[in-house]
Length: 346
Image (tube, rainbow, N blue to C red):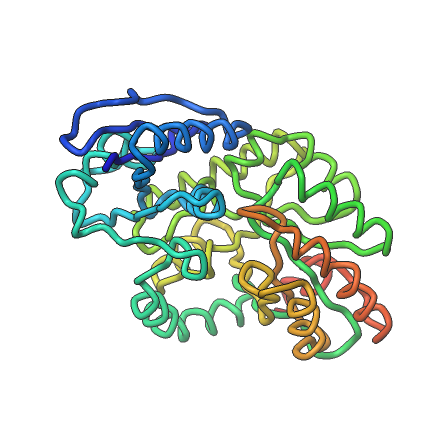
């Protein structure tokens, strides 16, 4: 059995591989944000050398690679803070250290699943933290510093997309939106925005709202205040450079939150954006299920969560025209979140 560690450092990914004794097989190797396919090819090659038994370790600040690796048929494990060394100021635990965790602490790693993703095994913790945040969330809604949905009056709906930009799926989503004359909100991951700035620029130029989805898609409750704000500021800087604007809207990955995280974001001048409808395009068995979920639950003022990155989004692309047609047939205007819900109204 061999172990790989997949890390992120600034705008790059880093992979290191060791054998079952901890001996380095592949030294730390860097990949740009545009080279995820090359990273996967390297891991497949190592798996072949290891007799088919290669396991990859990520930490909870790296929500960028788990789904692509799982979709590629590679076993992925998560190492949580209790078994890890201190993280650098702006990066995950190094790849060599993550790989070593497989050798020295395999029993303390969590095997990830496609359905559970990076949150596999943390559902109770995740839901408890959300429940504890209810009072803070309501207070921030009243002050306009948190948005979950827009007003129920009127006939507007906001469709939003997370985890892009993606070189294949984001252009297809943008083409569909243009065809139907629909505006949407795109919550961009900073590392992806740095890799594909032209897609960010196109998104903004076509009248869509560009917003912040952190730099590396981490599980935010594991971060310190400084780590959180570095994620937000670095992403805003990448989006500003690409599109000439600095977002004030941020969506926490997975919607994960605690009372203090929400206060930190509000105190930093950011408005937290959640949603009231999860289209489940990331987990539904087919496009028809995605369409049916939205048709069954949408109401005036809804914010619909979908994805243009973070994995195979062919279901999203297939479902989107039918969703837009349904919403337009029902007389809804398809607007960005800022137009759906002015700060004073949310």
